[in-house]
Image (cartoon, rainbow, N blue to C red):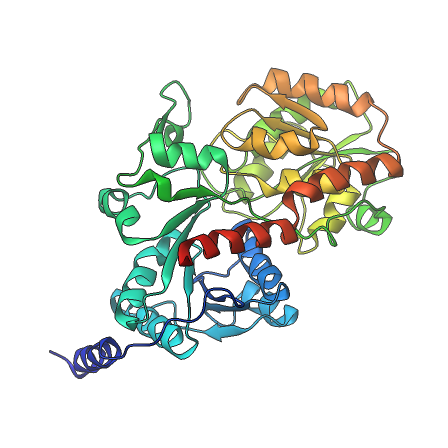
Length: 409
């Protein structure tokens, strides 16, 4: 046994020996959000911002995660209490031990793990702390955890699993199979075992003070767009095998542009398909008409600079926040009718759902919406209000706080 192993075992023994009184339920909640990524993307963005919204409601909310990451800086900028913890180490023991100490020191009532990679570390830290905090696990993916062990035992070790959409909850309870899909990740998604009453739907929230109708000529100019251009865009990651449907988007663009010469096509995001997408643009004769933008940190500006958001998803989708954000900015959305997309789309309802993978339907929808007159500013604000009612950060924070309180009574 190494000296390091002895140190870990000694620390664990010490932590197990400590017991703490329970904190009163009726006062402000004491919550620890665990996120060992904070590297970017919609999950990390909403993880940080909903923690801050809970903090603004008067609860004590601490975010624990690695320092020096993109969204640890966002948390610091918001003034959200943040505790840097190591994300790596043998068997994730540094992460577990630091979380255990935080639970004890901050008298945590609710420990909320935001990513699948943090589920078991959170469960172990809660048990080692001796404080018996309630454990909430968020599920942001439209599938159950990958390992049989997790699918079999997680529900028995947590107090609630917060699904981000009704579709995600359905997959966790019943599973989902789409063997006819040409995308293997859709073929078979098995359910979880255990007490399915622990699976609760809590929609994520979006910052409606940021995502709001506006004009963004500066962003259009930065992207080389003219006032006369009608701009379609896909916004999201583009990792292999097919990203968010960017290859289908470019196929549709090649067929739309001859019919509507003033159309332009942007791919906003980042991923490992960059070279493939650039080659596809050249091969389809779309140079100067379609391009990959530099990575954009200001998505409200981006969504106000385009005319129509396109999400031709062919993989799995839990609840695409970019649809809610585009509607909140008063923009129409064309999206695949699959998984959690209809839930996100229904609240705003401005745009069109199409058959997944159908370039033909995508072409016709894009041609239709490029010819429609845009909403005026008053109508865009009405659309914003509908989305804010269901998907604001404040609404999400209240719903999440209510879930926490039900676990403590």
